[in-house]
Every structure is written in C-alpha cells, then in structure tokens.
View 1: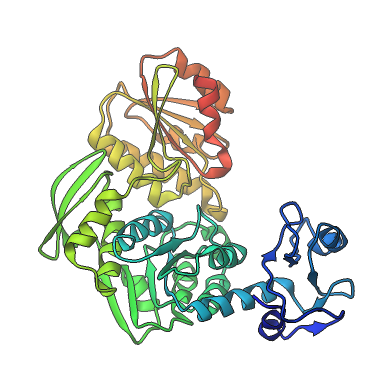
View 2: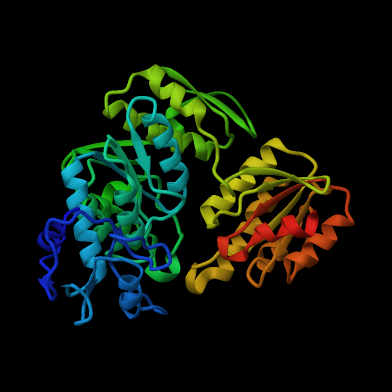
Length: 428
C-alpha cells in the first residue's frame, strides 16, 4: 500500500514528514523487517512493540505507527490500525471470503473447504491455526493479489472476539462446524458459547450461513439470509474404516481419505460451500478426495518400531468422544494415551470423569490399555473399569511403561498445551 492509503485507512495523525506516494509492506516484527517496510508495533500482555521503533528504523523501515510520539503515524490503537488496513486490502482485492468457526473441527473444516474450492478458484487460507485478530490480518496480507476465495478460520475465547473478526473480514459465506464445550470455563455455558460463535454473521455481507444441525445454533443465530444445516443424519454411509469414508449426500457419492463420522460432517460444510459458489459435483468430489489431515490431526508416524497415531492438535469433550468412537470401532490391539483437556472451568474434573464413563460404554476390551498423563486426565482413567489403565505424571513415565508392553500401535490425544509430541523422542 501507499503511505497515503495507510493514513486514510487508519485516520492517523502524521508526526513526521514522509513521502505519501511510497509503496510499502507492513511488518510487525523487527526480526524480519527489510528495507522499505513500514513498521506496525503490536502490544501484548508481555511485550510492547513500540519499544523497538528505533530498531525498526535502523534496519531500514521508512516509518512506523505509534500511539505515543516516537513514530511516524500516530493512532489510538495499533492493532485496530492493523485491522483497518487489512480490511482496506480485503475490499480493494474484493475476494470472496468464507469464514469458519466452531468449538471443534474448525481447522479441519477450513482445510476441507480450501481443498474443495481450490479445484475451481485461486484459494488462500488461514495458515495453521492463526485464527485471532493478528492472524486475520496476516492472512489477508499474505494472500496473493490474484486470490479469488479467502478461507478464514476464526477462533475465540470470549464474547465479542468473533464479532471483531467478522467486522474486518466482512464474510460472504459463514460456517459454524458445531457448538460444544471448548472454552466453557471462560464463557460459563453452552448457550454463551453459541452466542459467541454466532457473532460470525454480525458483519456478513453475503447471504449464506452454513452450520451443524443444532437446535441451539438455530435458536441463537440472528441472520436473515439462507441457512443450510447438516449433520451425519443427512448421510448414507456406504463404506468406512479408520482412514476412508464413502457416503451419499443429496444423491451424490463422495469419498474421503480419512475416517470418522465427524470428518464426514465437516465435509458436508465443504460440499455446501462449494455448491453455493457454483462448483459442480465432480469438482467438489475431486477436492474432497485430495484432502489429507494436517500435522497432529490423526497423523500416522512410525518411530522406534511403533505406529503412533497423533491426534494431539487439541482436545475437548466432544472431540475426545469422537476420537474414542473411531479408535474403538476400527482397531483391536492398541494403547491409548489421553492428556488433560484445557479451559473447561469449574466443572473440569466432571468432564474428565464423564469421558472415562463414556469409554466404559464403548467397552474396547480387557486387553486394551488406556493411559492418562496429567493432573486432570487421571480422572478419566479412575472411572474406567473395562480395560487396563495407568496414570502417569509425565510423558517420559508413560513412554517408559509403553516400551515394556506388547502393543505397537499407540494413540495420542490431548490439548496442545500437554506437548504430546514429546512422545516421539521417548519412544524412538
């Protein structure tokens, strides 16, 4: 953008003379700043980017935003300025924006939607899980100028956060994969979680809303456009195993190279998004077939004579139950290691106990091992009576136990904060 565009978009006060016709690239990190960039310092709980304005200028930045007097363009809030500039680019390039949220499954849904849309459109998506305000801006700026469809993942921890993302993204199509109990510790109830998720439509400029067939979502969402709801109930499953699904939806047959009913549900959102953007069945079918899970999402790794199925990208009660469903349905001889689920609030112990009881209801078998690592996960195994259990304080202790056993197939599931990828080092 030109300097004059930055001034106009942010209503900044010019503190120092600068060539307003200069073309610049926004940089928020002095470690990667290059000559000719314009520095935009961000602030967080433990850092203040404005302390590095002088360093940015020394490295070749032509100017900097600031809230004080040390920079070139003064604004009230640098994050708000970042969002305003991103919104300007979003509208100038005028790509179609598909915004996706959900208590669980939003990253998988984003990947499935992107895989489908790439069959017809030049598609760009939120990298990894960069689904907050800064990630939104980074995604919009990283999108190539010829992008036709931008697929944005939107996360939240409280009310108002997705509304803010929606305001600056201005989605054309919105998707809610589900409303569960993730972040219930912050929001207090599933009803409040639904309110937070349904904020995604607040600034929607398009007229299509796609969501899980959930009465709470239907009751909560305030949207006058077309609403499309779907779930596994709308599907006829023809064939499925741990790494493959074949199903019929709206009289068309589709295939996925992943298992699990929850993945089929996520695929339905991708099918509906593609159809609403004018894609034909063959294009949608091809896009779904090309989808493959990202790192830590049912990722198969062979280390030290073990096959490890790593699904430790994240965990909440809903995704844990879906994980257990798939494992118990398709596998016979294995060890499962479960870790803590985070941000469940004052009832966190109860949620872990309920998962243990749910595992009992699936009755995986007396020779199956269910191990727990963590202060909360122990409440899962304390409830299990149907198979062998073990409780461990550390990943290393659990790995040492596994190496003494007979099972060569290991499943890992926990919240990301548990750092279950450390198992690879100890089992190697």
